[in-house]
Image (cartoon, rainbow, N blue to C red; front, top):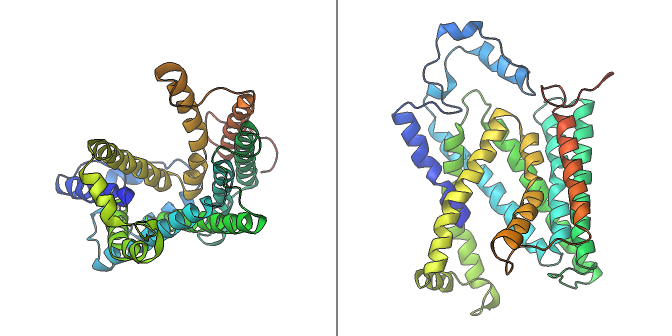
Length: 341
């Protein structure tokens, strides 16, 4: 719920950018005929953007957004909500390390759908880069399992059937999130595209509406351990209104989650949905590095200590960087590939 509330800030920024005609990715208010002679730098979506430009010389961002688009953008909110729910339910039966590994496998679904649904051909080196990204996720997740002695601190000690059910839920969540990434790329490259800020804001608005009128009522009426409910929203509101710490944390989370989703959508807009999935896999590494910094430089009561298995996480990071460099191979500053790729 807090994530969707934070994302709604995109609507305010969308209005601000359009009202004052500010320069922002996806909003080109000053396009003129001189730009026709510009040379476009080749990217994964060069053929797609070239086709769009050839069909119309009218600036897409300046077109009036039709009413149906605002309802159409409820779809990624549904995907986001469903993916989060499936992953959180699966986490009840799995260790966090396995959770991270399976979430990272979503890049395979994104790459498959980008090629077969969006019809954006991926070259062989793209698939090699995707493969090494998956390998890095396995290394990082395996390191967490080894560091916890094979039975993580947050282990659920689930039976085999429960573990299998958790894996199915989590893989389903990873698939739905992959669909969300690809759908967001599609909706920003249609004949009348949705600007990135509008996409974020409407996704937040619809997600908030679904949370308030669908998810919270379900959580309240389903039986559970939270005052007889699976989740009691009234208890949540009482804790929020009576705790300054929770209010402060929510305020920080509000802006953090907005900028996280903003940058994620801009990555999809400027590059592709596969790049979104690749950079998403950097999260476990960056969280681990931040935990080390907190433990050794700020407060040893928090964070994470360096273990004998931490060297494997360094290897995982190196593999992740290597896979990303392969995926980015044709561009400057990356690996130089030889032969036919």
